[in-house]
Image (cartoon, rainbow, N blue to C red; front, side, top):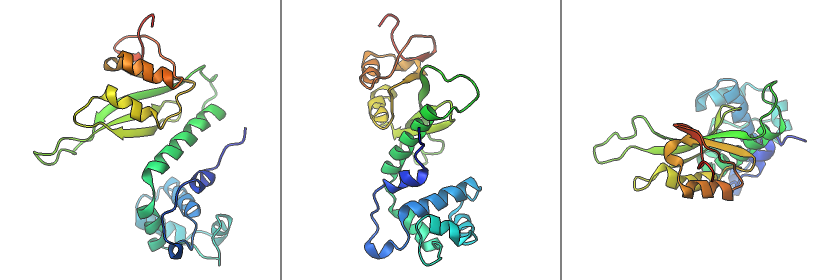
Length: 213
């Protein structure tokens, strides 16, 4: 099966820049940013310097014209106008497709892809007495070691009641979802099974489900 490139994934994203601001295509700029991050260029200035030092032939392969590479200002504008929700969902789907296509290790692939769900409080987010700490619910793919989806947990609700929103951006079919014991509610199990995920029973930290359900 052919693997979709990240450049192709980036081409599916909406581009809200004005016509005059599209001298460099968004997908190509995002691809360059990705390459710079892989090269451990972690700030906008570092990324821009890395791009400026790159061979313009690379830019030509990404659809740039006139033998030019995007400037600091162009890279910044692309990031400022980027639809982050669309990007997260596109990357999550790409990563999960990757785990189903390529062997990540030499071990035999599992019958079901493990997907861990867990909620965490963001360190330092309650920086004012009147502001509650930010809590996030995440879906983590064991084989890739990455978070493929993440949503905020409203102060008025629980991790379990936020799970449906998290799973809306995740491919659940063919996975076994693991989590802490407080996820073992009938509502959670029904949500997972509606998305064609698998549940089973264990202890303390569990694979979600009811024994005999």
